Image (cartoon, rainbow, N blue to C red):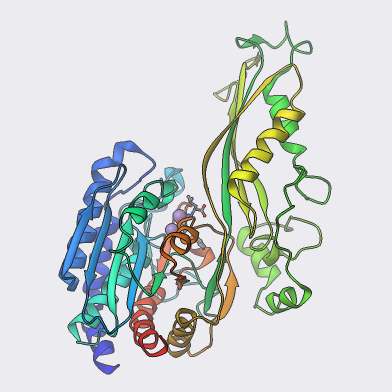
Length: 461
Ligand code: BES
Ligand code: MN
Ligand code: MN
């Protein structure tokens, strides 16, 4: 594909400038202050798809943020690739830990990215990765090398649980008719170790509120005689893991798909360096469920983690007080075949059962999502594997990821179409953290690899 390489070479600087423009808009879906910016980003994505050569571009309204739909249908005889991605981003906080503004993209060299990386919120998750598809589409268009029909569905609520994407999918099954869904919203093991994600964890996310006395109390006058909601909450949370770091909620593991020894041995072959892992995080040791390796703990095993906890006095100095209320946000990452609703109910029931009479416990479910696993013998996986092998010079390894993209299971259920998770980010790219970045090597590698996916998919299908 010489003409594609030539086109990329001639336009690569512009591609990067366009990505920077997109990264400058703070499309934070979680914060309603940014509503106009999120809407503006949808428009900008639509415009870029139009300019890249889409025949039809629609900014489809939903009860929440719009979904950008675009297509170029070249022949009814060719297969259709549906690209999914998201244009919304996580809030950038804590702002003081950013070395440059989260919405002022800059290129800097790093140890892992000697050719430079673009630093900004959304650089990797997922504007940068989604934009690779827009540019790859432009490349195929302008060089007359489109091998498949192409559709795009880019949403603006992924980071807040994709509440309206299901709504959209149910109402637009025909429009979304396709042979494969292609997603770059995951990562590879390393720049010299390509991989394809074959699994995602599911999610059950809950908020807990513990209420004690009807007002904040003097901790001297009442301390020792009244249940302190923060003490009780932390004690209950601590009891949710046993000494082997096993989760203690009755029934929690009932539906967990246990891997066979062969499957685990296969997994253990993926390159992983524990010392480097610890060093990168500045930790003396790892932590997790007894009997499982680090790479198993963060992918094929379920977890329970406190994401936030608050209550009482946290301002300057000391205030002697027993707070009336305490709160925590807790996420449980799920594996096949755990069901988010069932796990949420088990959690709620268990927490209520261990709560002492002296307090009231309320559990409020937030969003959830089903886990996903995909086979490696599908035309889509084979096309992705061959495309990456060609551009990386190495056959990619299948890897199950610990992250979640809840909508992937819904696509399969509602549309009957499999998703291929061909991402190009690195775990060290700091997604959701301060100083998120995306390697320029990775950005251009994606733009180079995606057209090959289309080519091989048309051949294998
Ligand atoms: N792109 C990520 C998920 C991801 C990243 C999967 C890297 C695998 C590897 C996605 O945007 C994300 O952050 N998902 C959320 C879930 C969502 C319901 C908020 C997550 O995993 O926490
Ligand atoms: Mn993402
Ligand atoms: Mn994310």
